[in-house]
Image (cartoon, rainbow, N blue to C red; front, side, top):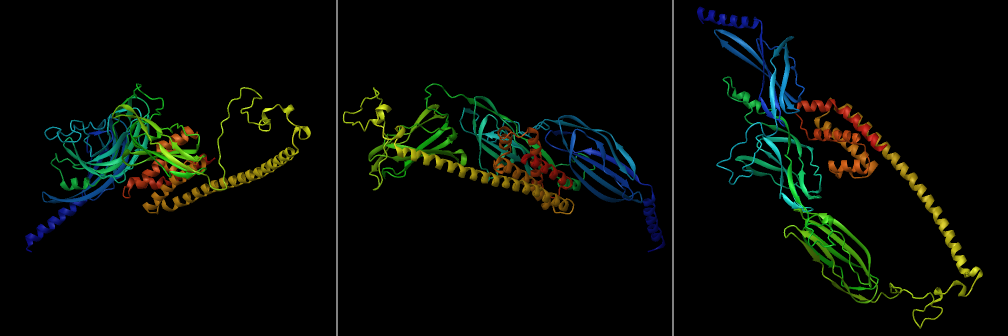
Length: 630
């Protein structure tokens, strides 16, 4: 290297180090990814701090946004070295992103924005974000030459990456007619951590939950936009009244990765920044739009008196377990009613059983099947009392067929039953019918003797066979009967007393077990709050819900785990008398514990909050369990 080259080299080095020594230039830029968002989505508020020189100490941003909820935060730092006009310069760029969810619609303001850099406050102008009703932030995409062949064509389709939609198999039904309502998730982005915030109440309907576990995801097109369609919930519902009834919404919360999140309409557009921004998930709440169904009243014309309210398409079949039987031996007649409709409303028919056949017992049960097909099963236990050939009569069921729009009478087939003599050593049990007597002492047959009609004569005309007019053996019989009854009462009293003592011990043991269960949870919280794995944290939140379900079952014995949230609320408040304020607290704890169970590790804000609040939620759950079991 010659002398001139060495001079240039050292000049560059000197310029580089002199640049480092220059006082730092600091700038703050605060932007949002959008200025208009739907009410059920979130907005990204990004703080960009640029420092010329060495990296500076940047504190967390401070601002006022009372109409927004902070749901997540992200941080990134990058260094840039620039050679410009013969000088080296170093820039440190710190980006802090806050994900905000609006609490209401309207023009919402983010004010008093400032960031402290090296103990120097940098301020920024207020920012206004317009929040509009869901689905109206951006016009829906246009169809490809109209709506022909497109699902949902001609309707306004939400433009967000995902949404929830309720769909009916028909919109015009009769009162009591089966209606299938399905709640679907439509998505065109990667959606994860989907959790239900509120299931539909479906007030005004009798509902049956239908299985959806094996329903496959579909690829559909709505107004020219391709979506993946996934079932969330499905119900078979039956309107309980006529008129225009509302089918309410289902609400969910989910995270998603947006596409084309960063716009490239500025000259400083960085494709790498766009790539990394697309890896940052957003959170959104979605709610299906309510829909309405027109419910018609059942016609009064030609309505049979025996109609019990069954509406639908049904088939009726019957069978008997045997056609030949001995007297006094039982036979079972089974009747199955199957079809699409509310079979629970089908009442047991009134049958005219023969005098020689006794109806010993009858029972019915309802069974819900796949695809909305249900069954009502009746079992009749019959005991023939007399030998001979007897006929089991037809059984009639009246239903209203909504397709044919008329009342249909279904009949079972009559059955001939061959009744043989009873087994040797047994006697017939006959049911005798007494005739009304026209006179007090009138004989019912000229062949009756006075001994046969002794019970018809006045007491003073009967032969006095013992002291006080009673046979001597009756005194012994009544004395023995009274003594036996007194002894049985003593035994029953002792058994009841022992049962109550055992029951009190069981209640005391259950209460002590519940108290011990919460003590263990408090100890677990101390272990996992800071040092435990995320799996241990979610398991502890799951134990909070389990503890509350144990308390409910110990107190009310209702199988709380198997009930939907709306059914649990109805049973506890309306049937068990639980205070509404206690239910609100209970529901809040259950919903939060379920939300944490479905959350994934890596969401720093959610995980940090879940760990820090664990002890507080356990204390609240313990207080609720104590109130429930008291």
